[in-house]
Image (cartoon, rainbow, N blue to C red; front, side, top):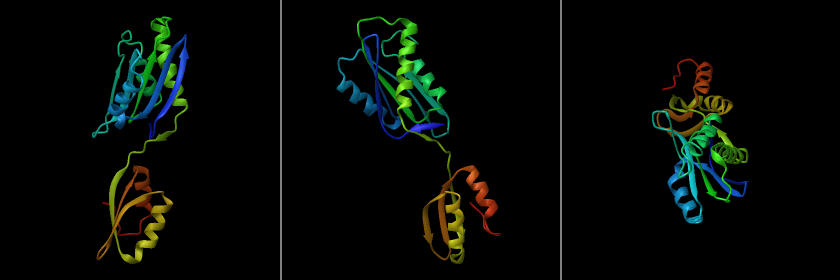
Length: 190
């Protein structure tokens, strides 16, 4: 699965109609819709599609045709996001009607192409499901454990120095398995 961390915009013109596709992080959806409606008040349609992971790691998705014939714009846009494995991201396509009717098939192609065009110009990041973990070690083990953690590209969120050292970090399931195999005897990740 992939996601975007910044805004990307691509304009596509099809039979004199202008499609401005804006692809951005889902958390900015309401703010971006407001911004685009203010920026393009004369646009005929503000079609959208989004997909995000909820707190239960389930994909939530939604789309809107915003006045276009039912199923010709929002759903095809969502299908492109789904097909590319996009999550935690949204796309809004602002359409200015050019005077030539595209028909239902033409609209489906136009909106799908607009979303594909903006995705092709975007920088996508791979989503990794991270688990929060803790490891308690002795002071004389710190350099050895830091070496292991760095080797596995695990980033430590916090180090707490008390009678022992508590390392708080996030890692993928694969990183945790590898770390467990390489830890000295007696150390356990919790």
